[in-house]
Image (cartoon, rainbow, N blue to C red; front, side, top):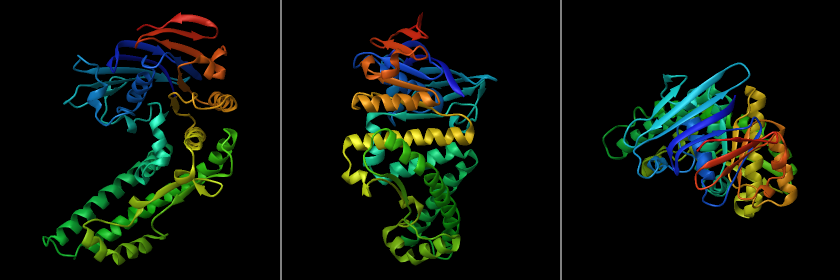
Length: 374
């Protein structure tokens, strides 16, 4: 499932824009502030129904406009699909697939999967554990859609247990029903931990190989670090029960998979604490590429990769290695201020798209120029 084209209206700096992507690599180039990152965000928004840059989605609506609308054409060799996203601040989003309304795009199997690299995504490695837990669970849901409910069920049980702890602490409830919620939280928690461990076990060898290919010096490793040592529902139930007094003092559940972490290591050292920004960047790229490969092998289709300004901080050898990996499988969009930073940009099978002041002027494919409207 690949993205064929995107039409955007009143999105960020774009009043209207149309873009057609290549089947493999599309290079978007232009000066700083031209609108390259906004185009990547528009593609992500159209694929998922949400922004990859902000939690305040009012920001995506162009100044002076009251709404934004995106239309995405995607498909494979057998069939094409149309996805539309309409957003007006203060109103529910209008999401449609092939003309039929849907509640959430992430649950639509005919939509393209998407992975994004933005400079501030280094927080996935350098930031708090919650970011890494959330990312693991998102990838697990993309890899195994049937297991999406595991995280939802655990989150719901955790909220119920926390509410009960708060009520007991304030004297509004007794402790009689707490063991039942310990067991319920443990049941979903063990399943969630198993999903995370399986995912890391599958990603680990590919991550290590890709990190080495990209030039990350030392032995790169992914480690899943669960808070609990339990391997059974009863074991986790016992751990939760043993911490009831502490949890009542705090008013929330202090133990369980919601305290887990994903650790990036190089030569047995945590990259979060001991890695340079350059090393963290290579580790993040290796992770995203490993996820793409695992999803491709499992689901038969690779996610669209959106990479913003990724080449500017890589040396020549690493740029070549990254381009080769991107071209090896799947569809990618890379932004740059300088075409010379993307070694593959002169290939005939690479589409080149120039943006000037939020206007898409030209696309080049197979050595032939054709117009892309703006």
